[in-house]
Length: 377
Image (cartoon, rainbow, N blue to C red; front, side, top):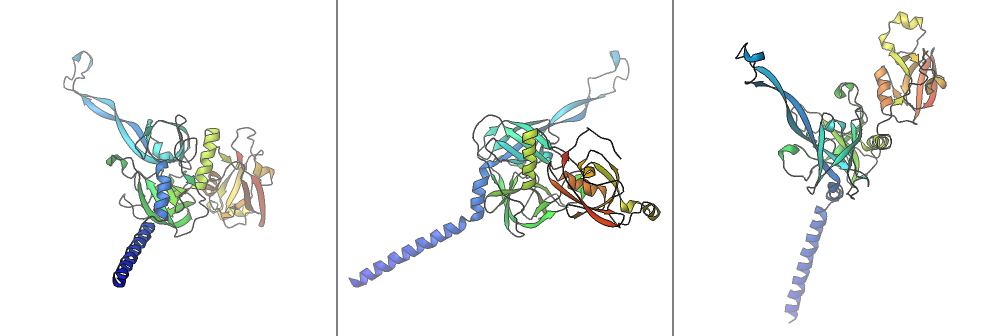
């Protein structure tokens, strides 16, 4: 009897141990990454766009006037061909606003709809877009309550922490509305991408670099941390083959959110304004620099300035050499433009200037571009 009881106890302990092991396995499978995906997935949408492309065709039934000349001459005829495209976006507030990349809708003649991961197609309106920061905001029509993603702090990223890229890679080839996910780490932060990549004007600065796979169709989708917070908008990849090579870049959500707030409130991104123009010190010959008493070895010489701009009112003048803006070294006028485009109305600016060999600082707040009072010095 005692022996049977002992066997029974051992069997029960084995069953309990197996159950505990299975529970541990289940908990390990449902890790932070899985939970983060579950929190964000329902807010991700497929952006369906339509572009009408003109193509030339020959019309065998078209002949010259009265059909008397060149009977066999075929005139070209132009017709429109509808081309469907696809991108990604995500709902980010209770009002049904969707964030995506501007280049997702840039050439679209219309946005057919957005599709939720559960297959529902929703009509949307374009609230506005900002080409320089590559951000666009859409809004779902109607007042239906839809799931939206929480946004995090892109300034609070650790190099090496896990991130998840969610989107619709090669979406037109897969007739399935549920988004795909890829996992990687933050490879670098605050990356400066060369101006040429954005065509000289697009502000691909302060970017988040990740090795999470970002492929065509992922543009506009969220980059999510392990807490289920959106920290970036998947935007571009560097690739020699056209496919993922572990060099993906995302716009930091802190910048994207501020641009979106401006678009929602004003219907556009208000253009920040420094109010002066300049020339690179390196572009002038030594004789000219000596004549102007320019002693700085690099920087941007102020050549024109508006009397009404805040920089002039705080002491900046023609002939001053701007060597840094908000602590960031500048050597070319486009360097100043890029910093300017990344700021918002009301932001504080500190210029480090060289005036006849003496270093000074000029502080002011960014104002909106205005045609009023445009007299220059």
